[in-house]
Image (cartoon, rainbow, N blue to C red; front, side):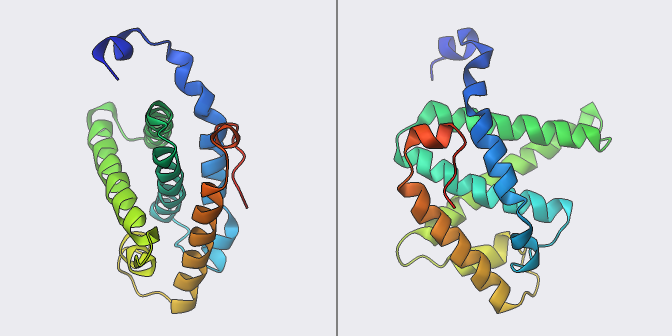
Length: 171
């Protein structure tokens, strides 16, 4: 995207991605991740689960060569995280630092999950490091999340970009 595109694009361009972002958040908040998958039901745990789902969707958009949509979806994530921090009472002075750390965490998770979901990749290890943050976890819980994310990733590949943008995530 050129500097002119950034300066002069219509602000509503990224709103086309709102249904997809809302679907990503809803999928990340699915109670099964927190019960069967033993993802910690905390602010960090919810962030990590949403980041996992978002990472797989961003990989799918990359695969479809949808760079603008990928950026817009990421911008919606940043806006949402900014809003959440402000609602928690984080002041203007430090919100930017928190957002920077969150974006760094998302980037790291995107790389880890992309490698983990690839053929021969060790998704379970990526989940232990990123989703469970190295804390001890029941192997059955990790296996549940791994199976769910692998199935989700495979189903995403068969989902049309138009369906994704409309917020229709596969089961």
